[in-house]
Length: 67
Image (cartoon, rainbow, N blue to C red):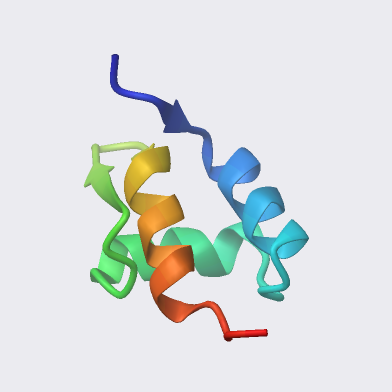
């Protein structure tokens, strides 16, 4: 099964991990290709996001500071 998250779930998840950002910033970053853990599909009326939890967790592990 492919586990996905909504934009708001992912932004809260990232804030809980210590990254200060809002859903709009995450949305823009996904659309611009800045974040490698999801995609943005632009339709005529909206943006649709697919955020993959496994890729998000891998990205967090990669950028997380060693304690």
